[in-house]
Amino acid sequence: MTKTSNAMWGGRFAAGPDAIMEAINASIGFDQRLAHQDIAGSRAHAAMLAATGIITTKDAEAIGEGLLTVLSEIEAGNFAFSTALEDIHMNVEARLKDLIGEPAGRLHTARSRNDQVAVDFRLWVRDQCDAADTAIDALMKALVGQAETGADWVMPGFTHLQVAQPVTWGHHMLAYVEMLSRDRARFADARKRMNESPLGAAALAGTSFPIDRHMTAEALGFDRPSANSLDAVADRDFALEFLAAASICAMHLSRLSEELVIWSSAQFRFVKMSDRWSTGSSIMPQKRNPDAAELIRAKIGRIFGANVALMTVMKGLPLTYSKDMQEDKEQVFDAADNLLLALAAMAGMVADMTGQQDNLCKAAATGFSTATDLADWLVRTLGLPFREAHHVTGSLVALAESKGCDLPELSLAEMQSVHAAITTSVFDVLGVDNSVASRTSYGGTAPDQVRVQIARWKEILG
Ligand code: ARG
Image 1 (cartoon, rainbow, N blue to C red):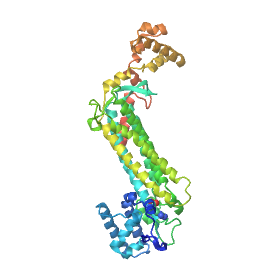
Image 2 (cartoon, protein in one colour):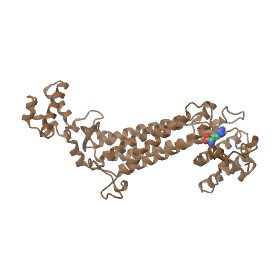
Image 3 (cartoon, rainbow, N blue to C red):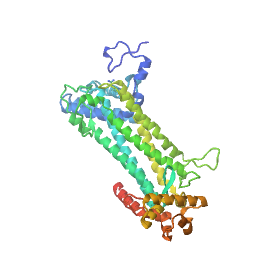
Image 4 (spheres, rainbow, N blue to C red):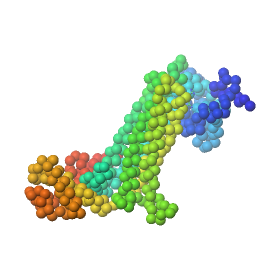
């Protein structure tokens, strides 16, 4: 049986599409998520068509009202989406026609699905930038809360995952706050740049109707209409910038997740995850698994994957619109959903976790973590060149290692066997508390510095 041609664009077609053609062509399965934006865009367009005298006020009112009815049907789950109608734009318009008849056919004057989808998707991505901002804010607050609890808790700082120097828990938490504030700025920056309205670019060349693009731009909360109609329908930078910002943010989350996985292990015991964020094993009764952290760690895979996928879709496309660009949406939807889920889970996990102060402090005192303090003492007190001090300290570390102790446990005589001028005041710098307290350089790990930064963040985050 031959299907009838498409009611929206089938004028020149005698027969309908092959079923497989319909399946590959349709986007309604996913772009129905743009219903809200599509209807907002159409309402703004209809009002503008009336204000400029292109359609009558009566028709514009019927269109505006009818679109609200369509929206309420969709929101109530009473809308029968049709694959034959391809996408959200034609599904909405077809239903509008059922509801109001002839005036529905005037809505598409001076417009194309090319500028329509560009405006819908931009509005959607813009909302996601705002949602990411809110979610990042909550996570930053949770981290600042942790920093406040343990501003002066001493823990090992690592490089190469080897104990490097003692640092403070508060300092470590605030490192992530810094990263997240850059993520936030990236979303804000992308949002600012994407906030131009493509509506009125029509298919690609603009239109001969006397439209008012400034009016629709303003109605939809855009800063201005885009200045080039070809660019307006061909551009997907806004989605790519969102995905790039999301990828970097997800990368940060994966690093924090990895630390939580390591820290909650029996070998570390730096942190106890709350029951609300842990899972058990079906066979090993003792297990307490950090599944949420592991899943967040993995989210970067799909989010960065979406970034690569869309970049690859857009690469080499000639101006202006190509149907390839329909492949932009699912990736962005999935990345946005998962980023927001990951941010929310991380905020909950961080707020609920308990740093294990004693274990952190004990671990800080292992691995010769105050060796740098010893070398600095040799420079400051004995006037040794740093390179020589480094060498002497290395010998002392080797000596301690051979005796199976850490640096503070060496006797003065043992110290002097390596360098005769060492005095007893050296022991003042070998404790971890003194070590962190001495790191008072701006941005350093000293508790006083950390408290200054906590105060700054509390002021910023409100
Ligand atoms: N469903 C399409 C998309 O997502 C809408 C634009 C269709 N435009 C066209 N010229 N066929 O990209």
